[in-house]
Length: 288
Image 1 (cartoon, one colour):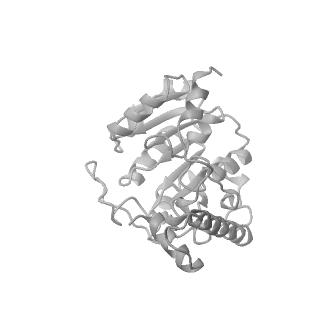
Image 2: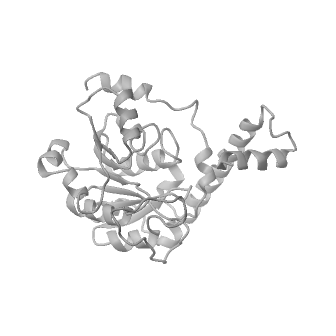
Image 3: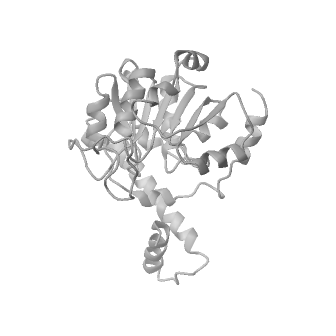
């Protein structure tokens, strides 16, 4: 049974309506919206200036789109560049919305089906490079050489979500490219100060259990020489780090205050109708 079906059953019981009721999806979305608003108010109250209070979803998994927008507004970055490692099929990720706002960058994924879906849906564009590759800490930095970084005008955002060696890959790429912002998927099962991560293994494949990625504390330790944690999204899936020379734009809260536990049910919150690649296809077809 999916998370969404569990939630529907819970709402059906709470409202005493049949599980097949046509209104059930609406009731579920209302409850999810209320919870997100409550958590945003709590974040604003307990950690003033926390970008998590400004999150929203367009094409991200949960509230990451709004958090990224808040971060880059404070940094004064209107049009930027990104590399997203673990971009999926492109429909739902951390940079789809940025592309629609005129950003440029690179999507990387190791699943041939995901890359095939992207290439079938989108036209070739100078604003988006698509790479099929299984990434490890040795090969990841070579994705972007000095010429490629120069062509982008430097890197504004690195996003890593590969359900395995995320820590090693994120640290290696951050050191090589020095992006302004790093967003990583953390293992929310382990709150700070726990420093927990999988044993590095280039052949690792996630078995959809709790042995994946790294704790928030492990990312803080790995990135601390160059980056500071500024937020975690309220679904408890992604952490946001800003380069130290830019971090003064953000309140300095302890990790225990910024950490968010796993609330994967918030990923069931919808943003309008079902997402597609249609707007992005139209946008990439028109040169900017």
